[in-house]
Image 1 (spheres, rainbow, N blue to C red):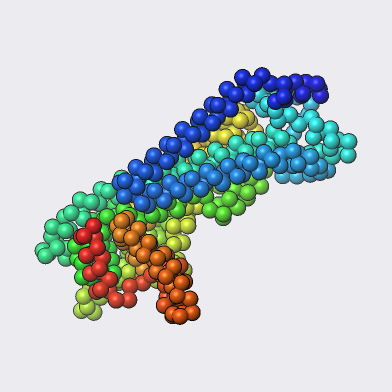
Image 2: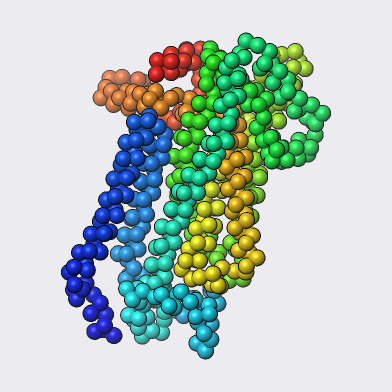
Length: 484
């Protein structure tokens, strides 16, 4: 056995084999790196700063995956030599029940047996632990499979988010026609007619909470966003944040905010990695954990969609009450309508929904390719079909209903978002903030108040800044964007 392992080591491998394999790995890596570099230059040339930052976020995720891969490779020997009592690996929280030697193992793990890698053989670690009457904490083969799963999960998550954003963006682009029609009828009764139609949403059931929530639930499936909704919410946003510029292009603004959110949603945050650990922990034989977890994204998605539709209804109710009091009826954006007065909670929920669904798909394809369709981890055929159907439902609902609703309704918070500025203006302001902070730091104690204000402006994200002087700010936005 020792002689066989030595003959397979690098020192006994022909140099041409080592050189050819190394060359192809380096070539593929360089091609991928150059492709990402040119894609970044293309996005910069097209002034797609938000998408460029999303690409940078993707590179960060690749770097993190590379670091995880390095840690797994470097410490695989150390982990495989850690020994624990047999009881903990044979009876506690097993994803599959172990079968006796008399049974044919190929029936349960055909690919696991027939396609073992000699590089990850675990005889040495097993001998080391068996002498102590124990077993390895995690075999080299299991570490390698975990390594592959983490990579597959990250790739599927990025692809899934990209598909969702593209399909959702296509749905939102259909509203461009509404924006053009509104821009052409600013001085007519056209807008007032849509306001009247929007207010009618609140008639008859405005004081019935159960009926209001029920209607919100079903409305997301048919006409989730109507022209009257878009017109009223657009008008409310402009009157609240930019009253001096009634021709402000609201559609372009929400498209920019979608791009800004994409660069955040494409990443895997620390709390999502914690969920991965929890999901792997709960994958116990007989619990059918992943079958029940497949319903979680659907439930959360329907809950978020219902909440967003209910916010539209609440805004319509407020307009109706203003009209009854003889006041000017208009949508009043406010954080009060959102959970815990924080619109960002909706974003975190959508981020988790996308990741959870990507995890379901990644885990399915990883098990399929690693262990085969008949693996015990695959569970029953009915469970598999149900999980796949749930994944498709989440994809459709999130792309065509929830994501467009999120992009529109979350603009009804008390603050505007980073996308209120065009890309080149945002870059200019970011540079100005950084320069101002550097100047404030150089002043030191000679101008402490100025430095403190500059540092505060640098630290606060755009979405937390409220407009105090509406007229000057909106006039500046209009002047900057027209000049751009």
